[in-house]
Image (cartoon, rainbow, N blue to C red; front, side, top):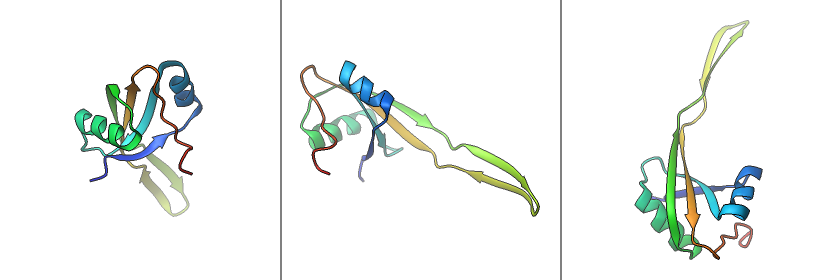
Length: 96
């Protein structure tokens, strides 16, 4: 099971990483905080101070068309915000 799916690289998360040493990841929905901490420490070689997680449910949409009512939904996902120790950074762009 791969715990870390992808990093979150947005303006808001980039500002958090520069100011507060916080990094965001989309993670496996079944992973707990200890597994996320171990995966980040192993993948990026940093020491993790704190992990916060959020579960996002699917967004459901309904549309009225000529053929009738169309229903759809997006995927559910889990997001983790990881605080690393002072002086340590994670460089997402090093292995592009």
